[in-house]
Image (cartoon, rainbow, N blue to C red; front, side, top):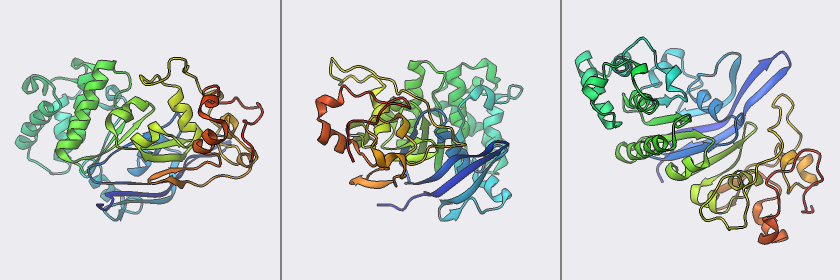
Length: 352
Protein backbone atom coordinates (compact mmCIF):
# COMPACT_ATOMS: atom_id res chain seq x y z
CA UNK A 1 0.00 0.00 0.00
CA UNK A 2 1.17 3.53 -0.77
CA UNK A 3 2.32 5.78 2.04
CA UNK A 4 -0.27 8.23 3.45
CA UNK A 5 -0.24 11.68 1.88
CA UNK A 6 -1.69 13.14 5.09
CA UNK A 7 -1.20 11.82 8.63
CA UNK A 8 -3.14 13.31 11.54
CA UNK A 9 -1.89 12.27 14.95
CA UNK A 10 -3.60 13.07 18.27
CA UNK A 11 -5.01 16.38 16.98
CA UNK A 12 -6.39 18.58 19.78
CA UNK A 13 -8.24 21.87 19.30
CA UNK A 14 -9.62 23.86 22.21
CA UNK A 15 -11.65 27.01 22.80
CA UNK A 16 -11.01 28.97 25.98
CA UNK A 17 -14.24 30.54 27.24
CA UNK A 18 -15.32 32.32 30.43
CA UNK A 19 -16.93 29.07 31.57
CA UNK A 20 -13.95 26.85 30.85
CA UNK A 21 -12.19 24.98 28.04
CA UNK A 22 -14.18 23.45 25.20
CA UNK A 23 -12.33 20.47 23.72
CA UNK A 24 -13.80 20.65 20.22
CA UNK A 25 -11.30 18.17 18.74
CA UNK A 26 -9.96 15.74 21.30
CA UNK A 27 -7.25 13.36 20.15
CA UNK A 28 -8.23 12.73 16.52
CA UNK A 29 -5.92 10.39 14.59
CA UNK A 30 -6.25 9.17 11.00
CA UNK A 31 -4.39 8.73 7.70
CA UNK A 32 -5.38 9.82 4.19
CA UNK A 33 -3.96 7.99 1.20
CA UNK A 34 -3.32 9.35 -2.33
CA UNK A 35 -6.46 9.19 -4.46
CA UNK A 36 -8.63 8.12 -1.51
CA UNK A 37 -12.09 9.48 -0.76
CA UNK A 38 -12.55 9.63 3.02
CA UNK A 39 -15.79 10.58 4.76
CA UNK A 40 -16.07 12.16 8.22
CA UNK A 41 -19.60 11.96 9.64
CA UNK A 42 -21.43 12.79 12.84
CA UNK A 43 -24.10 15.02 14.32
CA UNK A 44 -23.77 18.80 14.42
CA UNK A 45 -21.19 19.75 17.03
CA UNK A 46 -19.30 16.45 16.80
CA UNK A 47 -16.09 18.21 15.67
CA UNK A 48 -16.10 17.37 11.94
CA UNK A 49 -15.68 20.88 10.53
CA UNK A 50 -13.34 21.94 13.32
CA UNK A 51 -11.09 19.00 12.47
CA UNK A 52 -10.95 20.18 8.85
CA UNK A 53 -10.21 23.78 9.85
CA UNK A 54 -7.51 22.60 12.25
CA UNK A 55 -5.66 20.78 9.46
CA UNK A 56 -5.11 24.10 7.66
CA UNK A 57 -4.73 26.25 10.79
CA UNK A 58 -7.94 28.13 10.07
CA UNK A 59 -9.52 27.74 13.50
CA UNK A 60 -11.31 31.00 14.42
CA UNK A 61 -10.55 32.86 17.64
CA UNK A 62 -10.61 32.06 20.51
CA UNK A 63 -9.92 28.55 19.27
CA UNK A 64 -6.42 27.12 19.08
CA UNK A 65 -4.77 23.87 18.05
CA UNK A 66 -3.01 22.87 21.28
CA UNK A 67 -1.59 19.47 20.44
CA UNK A 68 -0.91 16.79 17.88
CA UNK A 69 0.73 16.64 14.47
CA UNK A 70 -0.56 17.08 10.91
CA UNK A 71 1.99 15.59 8.54
CA UNK A 72 1.61 16.45 4.87
CA UNK A 73 4.30 14.68 2.86
CA UNK A 74 6.20 14.30 6.14
CA UNK A 75 6.03 18.07 6.87
CA UNK A 76 4.21 19.06 10.08
CA UNK A 77 1.72 21.76 9.09
CA UNK A 78 1.31 22.80 12.72
CA UNK A 79 5.00 23.74 12.93
CA UNK A 80 5.58 25.60 9.64
CA UNK A 81 5.58 29.41 9.49
CA UNK A 82 2.51 31.48 8.60
CA UNK A 83 4.01 32.20 5.18
CA UNK A 84 4.65 28.51 4.51
CA UNK A 85 1.10 27.44 5.48
CA UNK A 86 -0.32 30.14 3.19
CA UNK A 87 1.70 28.63 0.33
CA UNK A 88 0.29 25.19 1.08
CA UNK A 89 -3.34 26.35 1.38
CA UNK A 90 -5.00 26.41 -2.02
CA UNK A 91 -1.95 25.01 -3.80
CA UNK A 92 -1.37 21.60 -2.19
CA UNK A 93 -4.44 21.35 0.05
CA UNK A 94 -7.66 23.15 -0.91
CA UNK A 95 -10.96 23.49 0.91
CA UNK A 96 -14.52 23.88 -0.33
CA UNK A 97 -16.53 25.67 2.33
CA UNK A 98 -20.10 24.91 3.32
CA UNK A 99 -21.85 28.05 2.07
CA UNK A 100 -20.69 29.39 -1.32
CA UNK A 101 -22.97 32.41 -0.94
CA UNK A 102 -20.88 33.70 1.96
CA UNK A 103 -17.55 32.34 0.66
CA UNK A 104 -17.66 34.14 -2.70
CA UNK A 105 -17.10 37.92 -2.80
CA UNK A 106 -20.36 39.42 -4.13
CA UNK A 107 -18.66 42.41 -5.81
CA UNK A 108 -16.06 40.45 -7.80
CA UNK A 109 -16.64 38.41 -10.93
CA UNK A 110 -16.67 34.67 -10.26
CA UNK A 111 -14.00 34.01 -12.88
CA UNK A 112 -11.69 36.58 -11.30
CA UNK A 113 -12.01 34.86 -7.91
CA UNK A 114 -11.09 31.50 -9.41
CA UNK A 115 -8.13 32.98 -11.34
CA UNK A 116 -6.98 34.82 -8.21
CA UNK A 117 -6.09 31.51 -6.56
CA UNK A 118 -3.67 30.75 -9.41
CA UNK A 119 -2.19 34.24 -9.47
CA UNK A 120 -1.68 34.31 -5.69
CA UNK A 121 0.48 31.18 -5.90
CA UNK A 122 2.18 32.31 -9.14
CA UNK A 123 0.93 29.20 -10.92
CA UNK A 124 0.01 31.04 -14.14
CA UNK A 125 0.12 34.39 -15.93
CA UNK A 126 -3.07 36.46 -16.19
CA UNK A 127 -3.78 35.15 -19.69
CA UNK A 128 -3.10 31.56 -18.67
CA UNK A 129 -5.19 31.95 -15.51
CA UNK A 130 -8.19 33.21 -17.48
CA UNK A 131 -7.96 30.35 -19.97
CA UNK A 132 -7.59 27.78 -17.19
CA UNK A 133 -10.57 29.33 -15.36
CA UNK A 134 -12.76 28.74 -18.43
CA UNK A 135 -11.45 25.16 -18.66
CA UNK A 136 -12.22 24.60 -14.97
CA UNK A 137 -15.76 25.93 -15.31
CA UNK A 138 -16.27 23.52 -18.20
CA UNK A 139 -14.81 20.67 -16.14
CA UNK A 140 -17.27 21.32 -13.30
CA UNK A 141 -20.04 21.34 -15.91
CA UNK A 142 -21.07 24.98 -15.89
CA UNK A 143 -22.63 25.70 -19.31
CA UNK A 144 -21.51 28.65 -21.45
CA UNK A 145 -18.30 28.94 -19.43
CA UNK A 146 -16.89 31.67 -21.65
CA UNK A 147 -19.70 34.03 -20.66
CA UNK A 148 -20.26 32.74 -17.12
CA UNK A 149 -16.68 33.62 -16.24
CA UNK A 150 -17.79 37.28 -16.17
CA UNK A 151 -20.85 36.67 -13.98
CA UNK A 152 -21.06 37.83 -10.37
CA UNK A 153 -22.04 35.25 -7.71
CA UNK A 154 -25.63 36.53 -7.46
CA UNK A 155 -26.11 35.74 -11.15
CA UNK A 156 -25.44 32.04 -10.53
CA UNK A 157 -27.80 29.48 -9.05
CA UNK A 158 -26.93 27.75 -5.78
CA UNK A 159 -25.69 24.67 -7.60
CA UNK A 160 -23.58 26.73 -9.99
CA UNK A 161 -22.04 28.68 -7.10
CA UNK A 162 -21.07 25.40 -5.46
CA UNK A 163 -19.56 24.21 -8.76
CA UNK A 164 -17.60 27.48 -8.95
CA UNK A 165 -16.28 26.82 -5.44
CA UNK A 166 -15.15 23.37 -6.56
CA UNK A 167 -13.43 24.96 -9.59
CA UNK A 168 -11.67 27.37 -7.23
CA UNK A 169 -10.51 24.47 -5.08
CA UNK A 170 -9.15 22.66 -8.15
CA UNK A 171 -7.47 25.76 -9.61
CA UNK A 172 -3.95 24.73 -8.60
CA UNK A 173 -4.48 20.95 -8.94
CA UNK A 174 -4.16 20.24 -5.20
CA UNK A 175 -3.24 16.80 -3.90
CA UNK A 176 -5.92 17.00 -1.17
CA UNK A 177 -9.39 18.53 -1.43
CA UNK A 178 -11.41 19.06 1.76
CA UNK A 179 -15.15 19.44 1.14
CA UNK A 180 -17.11 20.74 4.14
CA UNK A 181 -20.81 19.91 3.68
CA UNK A 182 -20.68 20.78 -0.05
CA UNK A 183 -24.29 19.69 -0.70
CA UNK A 184 -25.98 21.55 2.17
CA UNK A 185 -28.99 23.67 1.11
CA UNK A 186 -29.01 22.16 -2.39
CA UNK A 187 -31.97 20.22 -3.71
CA UNK A 188 -31.65 16.47 -4.10
CA UNK A 189 -31.05 16.55 -7.87
CA UNK A 190 -28.24 19.11 -7.58
CA UNK A 191 -26.77 17.21 -4.63
CA UNK A 192 -26.51 14.12 -6.80
CA UNK A 193 -24.83 16.12 -9.57
CA UNK A 194 -22.27 17.61 -7.17
CA UNK A 195 -21.44 14.19 -5.72
CA UNK A 196 -21.09 12.69 -9.19
CA UNK A 197 -18.79 15.56 -10.12
CA UNK A 198 -16.58 15.05 -7.05
CA UNK A 199 -16.45 11.33 -7.72
CA UNK A 200 -15.39 11.91 -11.33
CA UNK A 201 -12.71 14.38 -10.26
CA UNK A 202 -11.43 11.91 -7.70
CA UNK A 203 -11.14 9.22 -10.37
CA UNK A 204 -9.81 11.40 -13.22
CA UNK A 205 -7.34 13.59 -11.32
CA UNK A 206 -6.43 11.28 -8.45
CA UNK A 207 -7.20 14.01 -5.94
CA UNK A 208 -7.58 12.71 -2.38
CA UNK A 209 -10.89 13.96 -0.94
CA UNK A 210 -11.98 14.46 2.66
CA UNK A 211 -15.77 14.73 2.70
CA UNK A 212 -17.21 16.37 5.84
CA UNK A 213 -20.93 15.63 6.17
CA UNK A 214 -23.78 14.61 8.44
CA UNK A 215 -25.44 12.75 5.56
CA UNK A 216 -24.66 9.03 5.57
CA UNK A 217 -26.08 8.74 2.05
CA UNK A 218 -23.41 11.14 0.76
CA UNK A 219 -20.72 8.94 2.28
CA UNK A 220 -22.24 5.79 0.78
CA UNK A 221 -22.27 7.37 -2.68
CA UNK A 222 -18.77 8.87 -2.71
CA UNK A 223 -16.41 7.48 -0.08
CA UNK A 224 -14.46 4.27 0.32
CA UNK A 225 -13.63 4.76 4.02
CA UNK A 226 -15.40 6.61 6.81
CA UNK A 227 -14.62 8.10 10.23
CA UNK A 228 -17.53 8.50 12.66
CA UNK A 229 -17.11 11.34 15.17
CA UNK A 230 -18.95 11.99 18.42
CA UNK A 231 -18.21 14.75 20.94
CA UNK A 232 -14.82 15.62 19.45
CA UNK A 233 -13.56 12.04 19.14
CA UNK A 234 -13.48 9.33 16.50
CA UNK A 235 -15.65 6.48 17.79
CA UNK A 236 -15.48 4.22 14.72
CA UNK A 237 -13.62 4.02 11.43
CA UNK A 238 -13.35 1.54 8.61
CA UNK A 239 -14.36 0.68 5.04
CA UNK A 240 -17.73 2.14 4.08
CA UNK A 241 -19.20 -1.24 3.09
CA UNK A 242 -18.25 -2.80 6.43
CA UNK A 243 -19.47 0.14 8.50
CA UNK A 244 -22.83 0.25 6.74
CA UNK A 245 -23.32 -3.51 6.71
CA UNK A 246 -22.15 -4.27 10.25
CA UNK A 247 -21.40 -1.22 12.43
CA UNK A 248 -19.62 -1.94 15.69
CA UNK A 249 -20.21 1.23 17.75
CA UNK A 250 -23.76 1.83 19.09
CA UNK A 251 -23.59 5.45 17.90
CA UNK A 252 -22.88 4.38 14.31
CA UNK A 253 -25.68 1.81 14.58
CA UNK A 254 -27.99 4.55 15.88
CA UNK A 255 -27.11 6.89 13.00
CA UNK A 256 -27.85 4.18 10.45
CA UNK A 257 -31.14 3.27 12.15
CA UNK A 258 -32.29 6.89 11.86
CA UNK A 259 -32.12 7.03 8.06
CA UNK A 260 -34.30 5.19 5.53
CA UNK A 261 -32.83 2.19 3.70
CA UNK A 262 -34.27 0.41 0.68
CA UNK A 263 -33.10 -2.95 2.06
CA UNK A 264 -34.73 -2.48 5.49
CA UNK A 265 -37.30 -4.99 6.70
CA UNK A 266 -40.90 -3.88 6.17
CA UNK A 267 -41.71 -3.87 9.89
CA UNK A 268 -38.49 -2.05 10.82
CA UNK A 269 -39.19 1.54 11.87
CA UNK A 270 -37.01 4.63 11.55
CA UNK A 271 -35.90 5.74 14.99
CA UNK A 272 -34.39 9.01 16.15
CA UNK A 273 -31.48 9.14 18.60
CA UNK A 274 -32.96 10.34 21.86
CA UNK A 275 -31.16 12.79 24.12
CA UNK A 276 -28.64 15.42 23.05
CA UNK A 277 -24.91 15.53 22.40
CA UNK A 278 -22.89 16.23 25.56
CA UNK A 279 -21.69 19.65 26.68
CA UNK A 280 -18.00 19.68 25.72
CA UNK A 281 -17.29 22.00 28.64
CA UNK A 282 -18.25 19.16 30.97
CA UNK A 283 -18.31 15.90 29.02
CA UNK A 284 -19.56 12.82 30.86
CA UNK A 285 -17.08 10.47 32.46
CA UNK A 286 -16.33 7.18 30.77
CA UNK A 287 -17.71 6.75 27.27
CA UNK A 288 -19.16 10.06 26.07
CA UNK A 289 -22.06 8.29 24.35
CA UNK A 290 -23.18 6.30 27.40
CA UNK A 291 -26.01 8.69 28.48
CA UNK A 292 -27.74 7.97 25.15
CA UNK A 293 -26.67 4.35 24.62
CA UNK A 294 -29.21 1.52 25.09
CA UNK A 295 -26.40 -1.05 25.43
CA UNK A 296 -24.38 0.60 28.18
CA UNK A 297 -22.94 -1.42 31.02
CA UNK A 298 -21.43 -0.35 34.33
CA UNK A 299 -17.95 0.05 32.87
CA UNK A 300 -19.23 2.62 30.33
CA UNK A 301 -20.00 5.09 33.16
CA UNK A 302 -16.44 5.23 34.48
CA UNK A 303 -13.86 4.01 31.93
CA UNK A 304 -13.24 5.64 28.58
CA UNK A 305 -12.70 3.03 25.83
CA UNK A 306 -9.80 3.28 23.40
CA UNK A 307 -10.16 3.07 19.63
CA UNK A 308 -9.08 -0.48 18.83
CA UNK A 309 -9.32 -2.90 15.92
CA UNK A 310 -12.49 -4.99 16.22
CA UNK A 311 -12.29 -6.58 12.78
CA UNK A 312 -9.65 -6.25 10.02
CA UNK A 313 -9.38 -2.51 9.19
CA UNK A 314 -12.47 -1.68 11.29
CA UNK A 315 -11.87 0.18 14.57
CA UNK A 316 -14.29 1.19 17.34
CA UNK A 317 -14.01 2.69 20.82
CA UNK A 318 -16.64 0.75 22.74
CA UNK A 319 -16.89 -1.67 25.66
CA UNK A 320 -20.00 -3.24 24.14
CA UNK A 321 -19.61 -3.71 20.40
CA UNK A 322 -22.67 -4.40 18.27
CA UNK A 323 -21.34 -7.90 17.54
CA UNK A 324 -21.54 -8.60 21.26
CA UNK A 325 -25.02 -7.09 21.44
CA UNK A 326 -26.17 -9.26 18.55
CA UNK A 327 -24.66 -12.37 20.13
CA UNK A 328 -26.18 -11.81 23.58
CA UNK A 329 -29.57 -10.38 22.57
CA UNK A 330 -30.25 -11.84 19.14
CA UNK A 331 -31.00 -9.99 15.91
CA UNK A 332 -34.78 -10.02 16.43
CA UNK A 333 -34.54 -8.41 19.86
CA UNK A 334 -32.26 -5.68 18.49
CA UNK A 335 -35.14 -4.49 16.27
CA UNK A 336 -37.06 -3.50 19.41
CA UNK A 337 -34.20 -1.51 20.96
CA UNK A 338 -34.35 2.22 20.57
CA UNK A 339 -31.22 3.64 18.90
CA UNK A 340 -30.71 6.06 21.80
CA UNK A 341 -31.82 5.93 25.40
CA UNK A 342 -32.50 9.31 27.00
CA UNK A 343 -30.35 10.27 29.95
CA UNK A 344 -31.81 9.01 33.20
CA UNK A 345 -33.12 5.69 31.86
CA UNK A 346 -31.92 2.40 33.25
CA UNK A 347 -28.91 0.86 31.53
CA UNK A 348 -29.44 -1.50 28.60
CA UNK A 349 -30.09 -5.19 28.74
CA UNK A 350 -26.48 -6.35 28.58
CA UNK A 351 -24.51 -7.29 31.68
CA UNK A 352 -20.84 -6.73 32.36
